[in-house]
Length: 255
Length: 313
Ligand SMILES: Nc1ncnc2c1ncn2[C@@H]1O[C@H](COP(=O)(O)OP(=O)(O)O)[C@@H](O)[C@H]1O
Ligand SMILES: [Mg+2]
Image (cartoon, rainbow over all chains, first blue to last red; front, top):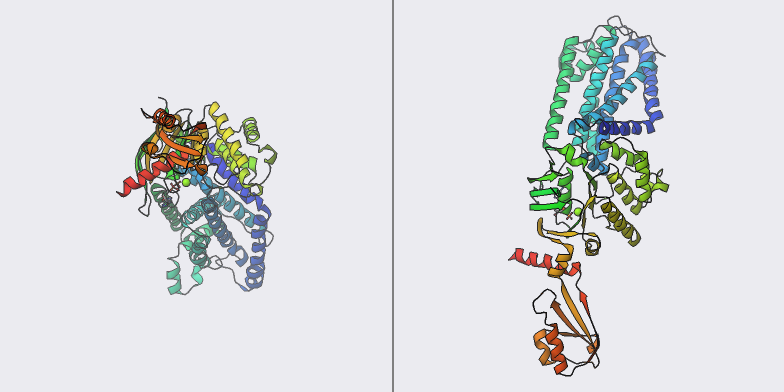
């Protein structure tokens, strides 16, 4: 047995079933939030906003909106997925099974990323009720979404490994990720900021992610698509290094 | 090679610096039932945890069916099923689903017929669609055993399988262990109930303070260390032990109607014939007599005491 595919798919199916149990809430939540965002930002505020670089404001916020939800859902699902068996103690079974740490990781991250992509797709479907959006680079858009979903879920997995209480599970998403994404230019172009704050914003990694994703839609972004690609790659490498360090040391999984 | 498990120089020091295991060497034979006996905190769960890949050893090696448990973890772990000490389950999962999940984790294809038989053997078949949280403690324990056996392991670790379990379930558990052994499964169980080791095991290991202080065939252990008690029911009660019987260190019981003599059944001279001769010389009559074997419990208490005192000195 070179790789334990059955073991991985058992975990993947388990995680997907966990999502399935809350299928309707999982489905309705992004639809409702998207509708709310569009009522507030799209119609109420958007009608008074001028186009941004030739893109109507309603369409402009679509990539950011997708990204925002994928960020929160991806990170919380992935961190919760690995935190739960740690918390209930059922992790013993995963650790005693003939599964490598990498296989464990791929199963959990794969399941969480699947859900994040699904949610992104649902939002993308929903926005068509409110605005016309055309995607300039569909293949790049799908690729970007997949890559980002995996990276975010990897990040969430690390949080889940690190956390030793439900409070810790929440603290990173709440205090770091949420502000960074909110200030990451989901609802505005950082060109709209005064020069000083624009320079500050360029230190926010999320700006590069949202900008890159927006480029796949409209062929333009706050920063060049290359810079975005580099940012995603760096984020991915960072998360992968962290996770392999974690596995090598057995950190917080094995005593 | 008849040893299915070979534990060599195993040591464990936890992050806090606590030494839970110290140079443990143990060979388990294929097909035997081995009872690891020891008080709380002796290191039993740590030892099992290392064998199963849950705890990382500080030093030493474990070979499972000849496979190194770290370098060849896939082959090693595939052979092992584990029922941990605590009841750890996914509350919302249904019995048959969670048992199939366990089989999947070990990379085995679905086998509904095997799982059905397994659940029937464990009296879980009627409860197969129940959620784990709806099961009683004893039923949960059975479900965990079903999970551990779901991938048809060669070795089953049972960490205190009958702690806090009622008498009936304990009987069932013992029967199940015997049935498994007939199928060739090697079983290693930990317990601090002596009667459990006495009832089930072929061999017994005694662990205390992280050290394996003794490994013996159960019979041999009981014989070697077993002391017997001879009780004589006297025709006439005695008020005190006669001076002539002082060399035997006898004591009185049942209000002077019993004369009790503890002796080493393995010794060259047990002292029994000479005691009886002396009594008959003195004209002491007895109506009945019987001997009893000391239980593993007495042996165990004696051993752990010895070790404690030895260790303190
Ligand atoms: N995760 C841990 N961290 C620190 N010490 C531990 C840990 N697990 C067990 N110990 C300590 O190691 C010793 C052996 O524990 P354990 O193997 O559970 O014993 P047993 O199963 O025989 O009761 C105990 O003193 C216990 O407190
Ligand atoms: Mg224990």
